[in-house]
Length: 267
Image (cartoon, rainbow, N blue to C red):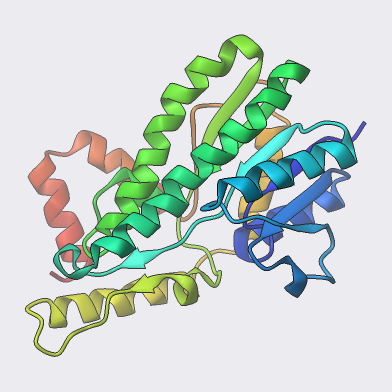
């Protein structure tokens, strides 16, 4: 019996690559999008779901269970980027980012746990970010929302172990996707004290995404995790130096690590 997989944000970028790859490997895949009508030629069904609207989550989870009879793997991939000086980002945009990157995945998890408990099996994979391991300049809100998802996963997986349900994090580095075009950019204001450093950092971040790794690498990593009997708590996928930066944060004095980051971003 092929495993049934639900991927939020499955219409483009990493989510689409994962969906295509798992479909190729024989999984029964359902992706989601806020605008499913745009993706009628996808290799797997794209269902309507907005992680910021709880009723769409429960409706779609129920549809998948009705169609497939079970739900084995849920990949919380839907997320949005955000950049800007924290002082200048409107509070509404900060809240919107946490709604999508943090509260959205939690609500998806809550919706699928009853079915997985009934099955006495299941795997939930939360797609976070290497940026969630450190406070990055002009990406502080994004770092915080992804870091919060990393931490709550650590607690959540202990709470659901008794039901034979597994949970893990996968933190990607920079991948060549359309995330830069979809993220909220605080404008580079002419009279802003952050104009120079923020403008330079923004260009550097966009370059990293444009020259990022192939999302197929994430798809292969997730496929391997699904086939792992007891997944680890954390996985990191990306360039060696991006993954190594997490190791450096653990072993270096805080101010030394901060200086490395500031030098990298030319601040």
